[in-house]
Length: 442
Image (tube, rainbow, N blue to C red; front, side, top):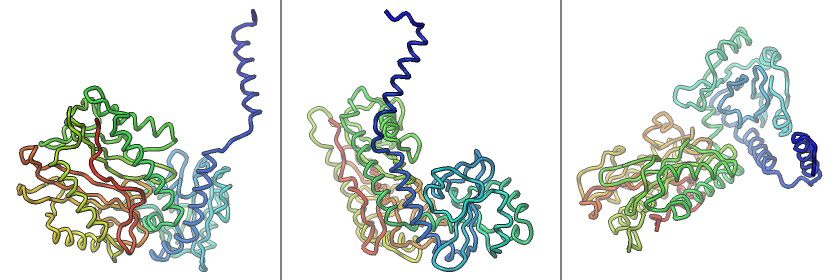
């Protein structure tokens, strides 16, 4: 019998385990691989996108201010780093085909190891750094419409003006449009990463709305939502919109969302959610029907309603193409849908006509947020409807189709369709397989 004190025995066992662990060769490191991918994306953005974004918006220098405990929303995009007090990520257009990049006041192996910055300097060097370059227009992250471009606090703004002094402190202008362009003009490596995030989103959503997770009469809506959160934790992922929206829709509309409502046979279920992978966030929906005993498919009225949604989606993907403004692309799309017999309505305001399918459209920017900050066709992004819709823009092809269902006494069902796509000269092209129809829970 080992008569040593219990704490001694525990310490010896733990030490032996650590020694054994330490002697094991290091295997593939997911964290390192993700960091390397982000470094590649960052380098390509700085090389290929940033010069155009700064020059299109007449910005000579762009300063993003960070503070310990108050990091800008662009922290990941600009390279992270340890911010012990104040830090400044400074980009200067000095002519030529690249933008000078410097970080003042941040450090760390992940920041330095990427090698995308020309200089890493102390924070108190900012004033001299700016004076030497003498920029006319200094963009800072202040924004009227885009939260992700509005990271500069009032305290940071006042401090920055004082540090720069006259006349440079008087030259601060909003970088809102620059930030939108920098984020939404995509490189190939970004598109590949986003497509991977989309595939993960699709896989998990379709598993969630299946008998792998759902037992009719026992599983609740929140059980499904928490199952998804557990999968995200297991795979080191994030959620685009906090708790996934798992809901049931009936003749009177949405009945319950991600709560203790038990899923029953005959329910029409929806999921609205997105996955965060690397620095990319998706936005998608899926629809499922819980079969009644003896049924092998959803009721015909529901299948027909979903098919109408797919018809509308097909028209949208053909007509959403590059345009001088996103609003022009939306107007062209609405015209094509009307010509095909659909009725365009405001969100959740269907007509009483049982012979018509009403459509509420919401195609919006995606990418680095579930609701991205690039050009948008959506009614809830009026400012960005005026932005140019360029080839390579990531968008969510989102619509709500309201169609009369005989099995519901003629009430209209709201069928939501949403998947993420890439805007091209040929139309909006899918980045992963879109929803094919109503999923079945047996």
